[in-house]
Image (cartoon, rainbow, N blue to C red; front, side, top):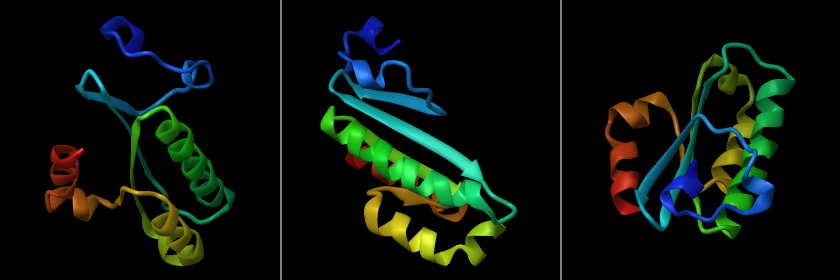
Length: 109
């Protein structure tokens, strides 16, 4: 898909799936992931490490990463959420999105 618009994608990222890919300019690619967790468990914990790694892979290629997440499960997983806020550049919940923070971030990238 990105190759069709002239964006070179490294081999290790070619087969990655994403919730949303925004192309702001030919040189600006933004991967947005969105999810909601109602119950605690291993999935929210695993996703934090996974998205920290994904952001680093994307950064090495000059791409940006935004994670939008929300849900009751995060109230009981504060350690993981704190870790995510420390490591992920753009981490939002649905309130932040409603308040316009996503638009502001997209304008700044």
